[in-house]
Image (tube, rainbow, N blue to C red; front, side, top):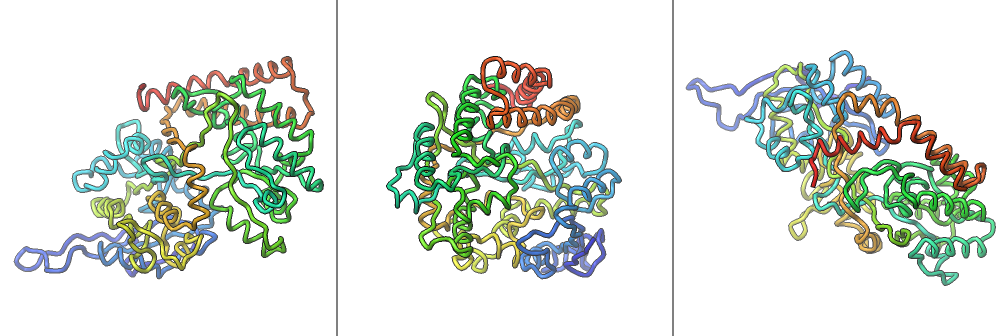
Amino acid sequence: MATVMLGGLAAGCSGKDEPGPDGNKPEGVTKKPVTFSWLVYDRTEGKVRTDWEIFKEIEAKTGVKVDFQVVSQEGLTEKRQIMIATNSVTDFIQVTTQEGRENGPEKVFLNLKDYLNIAPNLKKFYDTYPEAKALATGADGGLYTVPVLEGDAAGKGFNFIWYARKDLMTKNNLKEPTTLEEFYQFLKALKEKYPDTYPLVSNSPIGDTGLYTVFGRAFTGIQGFFNLNPANDQYAFAPYHSGFKDAIVYMNRLYAEKLLDPEYSLLTQAQWEERILKGKSLVTYFWKADLEPLTEKAKKAGAPADYEFDAIPQFAASGIKNYQYSRSLVGASGRAISAKVKDKERAVQFLDYLVGEEGSNYLSLGIVNKTYTIENGKPLYMKEFGASPYVPLRRDYGVWYDNITLDNAKSRDAWERGLNEKSKAINAKYEKYIIPAPKAIVKTEAELELEKSKLSNLNKFLEQKMTEFVTGKTPINDTTYNQFIDQAKKLGADELLAMYSTAYKRTYGTK
């Protein structure tokens, strides 16, 4: 494991303010130098560096030097789990909020609640974000993590859009589809014009951009298999909705008519991208941030000069809410401090500084007039960083770097404020579909055990059986669909649904 030192003192060294001969603190001296260790991983945009300017600035303001303990991205989870199991975590570490709740009371992580009297920014954070406080709270009532902020408080930031080849739409005078039937006809027209293609491709059957997720939501109003139904604020199991069978029938029609890539359920990310870049597929659902980079990548790979992807509207079945959940306000991970850190008060004060406006700005935005400017009172990344500012920001400055930053929402806001007109138009097109994401729920030990024992097997069954339906291996009729539902029940669908509903009501109450 590589070690990157941001200073000269040994990890864990503690120190308090040194008074002068008369008992007062010397003028200009606020903190004696101290070093804290911190577990991180090297990102693809750039490795963790010793000379990131934001940490020099932070050290000048706080006296704190950071000793980054660097592992590979692939090895991060295992390393963290070993550290937790052996109670040997670094002074600062990012863990899942669940790991914080479970291991904090076991004296692996520091109980931040005991130090809120010296941490005004932390206190304000928990008061401002009740969801974060709920996720940080252990069974003993202690607070063990500072959950990372992911979305804006208004619940408008979002990630995903439908892509379609705008150049081909223009060439063939094809209108944007706005309904499921129009989408089918749209794919059919593309297939007729370009018979060597499979117009629709998906990078996965499940997950946020998965085929089953997207069409399941379009026909049932439920995102994924289990989720809150925004129509009534209650947890639901999508296959119980009458529209779920309709979604399967619809996807089967796309498959049977060769409008959907026949290998959709097996494609790797690289294979999905290859089909997009080489024009073998013309429509997909994916991260909006990748639209322009993929277009440029295709042109560099030899695509026609007018090759262009653009967003088409989102659609839903008649009577179904046409929506996309925003980014979650609070993420599933949070910053924790080791219960064994030598100078506990100093560590908490450092975390408090990073949560405060100045520290948060360093981690999320960088240095004013070097990485960002202020326009109309709002931060905006430097224009020379281009459409993907996160690459130079992470590589050269350590800004917006996973396992280091605490506020991804602030970074995304600064990035989107500087988007080009096309990207702003896409945001405007999708704004009407976006609603606030569901709050994360806190599960008891028994609920976690139930989820662990049931969910994985159920998800595997659902994905496998849906693939059989869509590809025609299993015919779709009342008998086969009822058998599908019965087996889902046997695998724990009802128990899981009841558990999610109970946990949600317990965590946040009822309206």
